[in-house]
Length: 146
Image: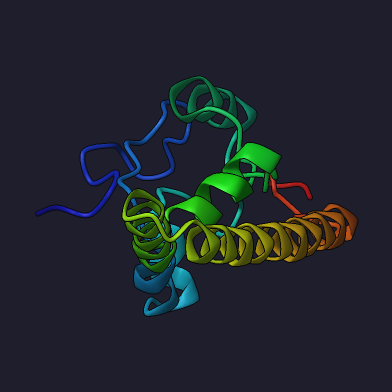
Protein backbone atom coordinates (compact mmCIF):
# COMPACT_ATOMS: atom_id res chain seq x y z
CA UNK A 1 0.00 0.00 0.00
CA UNK A 2 1.45 3.36 -1.02
CA UNK A 3 1.45 6.36 1.31
CA UNK A 4 -1.39 8.84 1.03
CA UNK A 5 -0.79 11.25 -1.82
CA UNK A 6 2.12 9.25 -3.33
CA UNK A 7 0.48 9.54 -6.74
CA UNK A 8 0.75 13.35 -6.70
CA UNK A 9 3.74 15.50 -7.56
CA UNK A 10 5.64 16.87 -4.54
CA UNK A 11 4.19 20.14 -3.32
CA UNK A 12 0.89 19.66 -5.18
CA UNK A 13 -1.80 20.55 -2.64
CA UNK A 14 -4.49 21.75 -5.02
CA UNK A 15 -6.43 18.50 -5.37
CA UNK A 16 -7.99 16.75 -2.40
CA UNK A 17 -6.22 13.67 -1.14
CA UNK A 18 -8.14 10.57 -0.20
CA UNK A 19 -8.00 10.39 3.56
CA UNK A 20 -8.83 6.97 4.99
CA UNK A 21 -10.61 6.40 8.27
CA UNK A 22 -8.38 6.73 11.31
CA UNK A 23 -9.36 5.76 14.80
CA UNK A 24 -8.13 7.76 17.74
CA UNK A 25 -6.14 4.73 18.93
CA UNK A 26 -4.44 4.40 15.52
CA UNK A 27 -3.66 8.11 15.37
CA UNK A 28 -2.21 8.18 18.88
CA UNK A 29 0.31 5.49 17.95
CA UNK A 30 1.76 7.65 15.14
CA UNK A 31 4.38 10.35 15.44
CA UNK A 32 3.21 13.88 14.66
CA UNK A 33 4.87 13.79 11.24
CA UNK A 34 3.44 10.37 10.41
CA UNK A 35 -0.05 11.46 11.51
CA UNK A 36 0.17 14.57 9.31
CA UNK A 37 1.31 12.46 6.36
CA UNK A 38 -1.36 9.80 7.01
CA UNK A 39 -4.04 12.49 6.96
CA UNK A 40 -2.72 13.83 3.66
CA UNK A 41 -1.50 17.14 5.01
CA UNK A 42 1.81 18.90 5.49
CA UNK A 43 3.33 20.93 8.34
CA UNK A 44 2.23 23.99 6.31
CA UNK A 45 -1.41 22.87 6.59
CA UNK A 46 -3.98 22.53 3.84
CA UNK A 47 -4.68 24.89 1.00
CA UNK A 48 -8.06 26.61 1.06
CA UNK A 49 -9.00 24.68 -2.08
CA UNK A 50 -8.13 21.33 -0.50
CA UNK A 51 -9.92 22.23 2.75
CA UNK A 52 -13.05 23.14 0.76
CA UNK A 53 -12.85 19.89 -1.20
CA UNK A 54 -12.55 17.87 2.02
CA UNK A 55 -15.49 19.76 3.49
CA UNK A 56 -17.58 18.76 0.47
CA UNK A 57 -16.33 15.15 0.57
CA UNK A 58 -16.36 14.43 4.32
CA UNK A 59 -18.71 17.07 5.75
CA UNK A 60 -18.16 19.37 8.71
CA UNK A 61 -15.58 18.53 11.34
CA UNK A 62 -17.73 18.57 14.46
CA UNK A 63 -18.03 16.31 17.47
CA UNK A 64 -21.26 14.42 17.99
CA UNK A 65 -23.53 16.10 20.49
CA UNK A 66 -25.03 14.34 23.46
CA UNK A 67 -28.81 14.37 23.25
CA UNK A 68 -30.95 13.40 26.25
CA UNK A 69 -34.55 12.34 25.78
CA UNK A 70 -36.93 11.23 28.50
CA UNK A 71 -38.16 8.34 26.31
CA UNK A 72 -34.58 7.14 25.75
CA UNK A 73 -33.88 7.09 29.48
CA UNK A 74 -37.20 5.38 30.20
CA UNK A 75 -36.49 2.80 27.50
CA UNK A 76 -33.14 1.97 29.10
CA UNK A 77 -34.88 1.59 32.46
CA UNK A 78 -37.53 -0.76 31.06
CA UNK A 79 -35.04 -3.03 29.25
CA UNK A 80 -33.72 -4.39 32.53
CA UNK A 81 -34.13 -8.20 32.51
CA UNK A 82 -34.69 -8.29 36.28
CA UNK A 83 -37.56 -5.84 35.87
CA UNK A 84 -39.17 -8.11 33.27
CA UNK A 85 -38.75 -11.09 35.60
CA UNK A 86 -40.35 -9.21 38.50
CA UNK A 87 -43.28 -8.06 36.34
CA UNK A 88 -43.72 -11.68 35.24
CA UNK A 89 -43.76 -12.75 38.89
CA UNK A 90 -46.36 -10.07 39.65
CA UNK A 91 -48.50 -11.28 36.74
CA UNK A 92 -48.27 -14.91 37.90
CA UNK A 93 -49.16 -13.87 41.44
CA UNK A 94 -52.14 -11.92 40.19
CA UNK A 95 -53.34 -14.76 37.97
CA UNK A 96 -53.06 -17.31 40.77
CA UNK A 97 -55.25 -15.21 43.04
CA UNK A 98 -52.57 -13.62 45.22
CA UNK A 99 -53.47 -10.05 44.29
CA UNK A 100 -51.76 -8.55 47.35
CA UNK A 101 -48.35 -9.94 46.36
CA UNK A 102 -48.90 -8.84 42.75
CA UNK A 103 -49.68 -5.29 43.84
CA UNK A 104 -46.68 -5.19 46.20
CA UNK A 105 -44.29 -6.46 43.50
CA UNK A 106 -45.73 -4.11 40.86
CA UNK A 107 -45.50 -1.16 43.27
CA UNK A 108 -41.88 -1.92 44.10
CA UNK A 109 -41.06 -2.27 40.39
CA UNK A 110 -42.86 1.00 39.62
CA UNK A 111 -41.00 2.84 42.38
CA UNK A 112 -37.71 1.34 41.25
CA UNK A 113 -38.28 2.39 37.63
CA UNK A 114 -39.44 5.85 38.69
CA UNK A 115 -36.48 6.44 40.97
CA UNK A 116 -34.01 5.04 38.43
CA UNK A 117 -35.53 7.17 35.66
CA UNK A 118 -35.44 10.32 37.78
CA UNK A 119 -31.80 9.81 38.80
CA UNK A 120 -30.59 8.81 35.34
CA UNK A 121 -32.43 11.62 33.58
CA UNK A 122 -31.04 14.23 35.98
CA UNK A 123 -27.54 12.78 35.56
CA UNK A 124 -27.85 12.83 31.76
CA UNK A 125 -29.01 16.45 31.86
CA UNK A 126 -26.06 17.36 34.09
CA UNK A 127 -23.64 15.69 31.68
CA UNK A 128 -25.25 17.51 28.76
CA UNK A 129 -24.93 20.84 30.60
CA UNK A 130 -21.27 20.17 31.37
CA UNK A 131 -20.52 19.15 27.77
CA UNK A 132 -22.19 22.31 26.47
CA UNK A 133 -19.79 24.40 28.57
CA UNK A 134 -16.67 22.80 27.12
CA UNK A 135 -15.04 25.08 24.60
CA UNK A 136 -13.61 23.24 21.63
CA UNK A 137 -11.18 25.29 19.57
CA UNK A 138 -8.59 24.23 17.05
CA UNK A 139 -5.86 26.20 15.36
CA UNK A 140 -5.67 25.29 11.69
CA UNK A 141 -3.20 26.32 9.05
CA UNK A 142 -4.59 27.31 5.64
CA UNK A 143 -2.31 28.31 2.79
CA UNK A 144 0.62 28.37 5.25
CA UNK A 145 -0.99 30.87 7.67
CA UNK A 146 -2.68 30.13 11.00
